[in-house]
Image 1 (tube, rainbow over the protein chains, first blue to last red):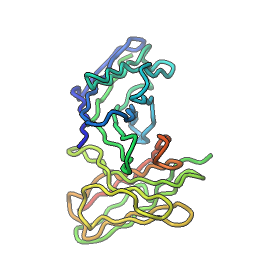
Image 2 (image 1 turned 30 degrees about the vertical axis):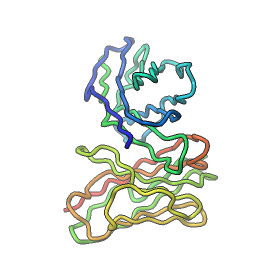
Image 3 (image 1 turned 180 degrees about the vertical axis):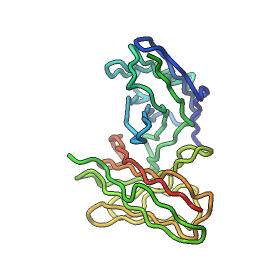
Image 4 (image 1 turned 180 degrees about the horizontal axis):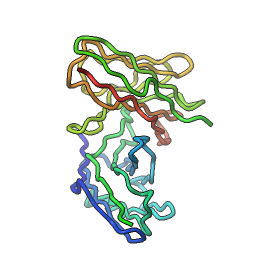
Length: 116
Length: 115
């Protein structure tokens, strides 16, 4: 079974600084998808960024980028120029690419605080 | 385009009762997934429906059931409620949920409290 581990329950960053959230996963699959979701205090889960395992290039979405290390099964999220609105719970998630089960498997989450 | 909506947003029940939660996906989306979120267990997959058929199921007891209607709206039902069922129940919709990794869009959730 696939597992996703986020080893940092909480992180804090100063506004305008850069922060990196860690995620490792375990799978025997060679093709899969990885995601970072953000859940602000209002609780609406929002997709931040997505990475296809077959792509070597790291995904980037504006101030958000990932460091995908397939061999190490590591998928970290870097937030540059942090803003107060970035404060939220961040979840790393995994999804198979093939087969019939397309559920998302989530890590426990990292609570990010942004200090003004 | 309207997002995923879930009703009710908050619910208080007592042990032994049953409850039905509703989810309306984004227009055109045919896949609906349900997740349970608790502080202890985190986010856990309940089940997924596509074209009115349950396609995948998580490791939850039979007290948890669901269905999907022809308009893709989905309901989940929990019978004989237990204190441990208190959680935030999230619904997510996607176009196909399958072959192509289309994005899952989440609703705001239903907060269920069992007393």
